[in-house]
Length: 197
Image 1 (cartoon, rainbow, N blue to C red):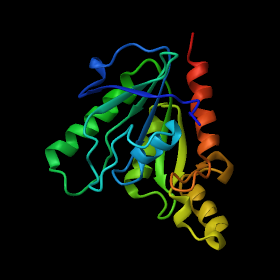
Image 2: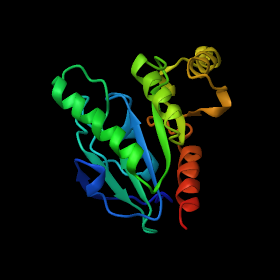
Image 3: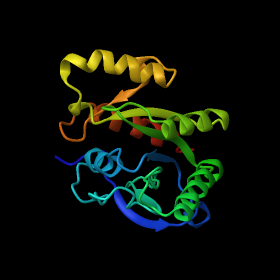
Image 4: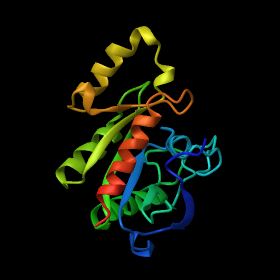
């Protein structure tokens, strides 16, 4: 069954200035191995839309996907992967910050956190920076299938507390099992519809 989030890859760009105008946009950001590409594929119900790699840090540009409505979804480079040279990592930081600060059509940023291990220091820095700069954002906890069901209530409380949020403020998903994907897809679509002026 086709997803209501029918995405088509448009382009990869090294900076926000090279992106086309859009009636509304959401962006996904997170650490390199948090499962960003897999999540975008699950939302679109397409296996090879966003390239999934066994090597974290492969998304090195701003990747843009478009819906039939013209609204867009952005996959930002992952941050914090140790095997990437320092100067490239610094470039990614500038690229991500430049995009988030300067993209006027951005309706919502989805900050992905690994649900199995919880937010890392880098995730919390990203969250603090987003709050300080007034970037609208939602926390998405990925890989919930990797948390044993008996431990999930505790894991959810710990993760939410670390992010200074309530458990209900976080979207809990698993690309492998499909848990929470419909809820997140509806949320993405609601932001993109709201953005159409």
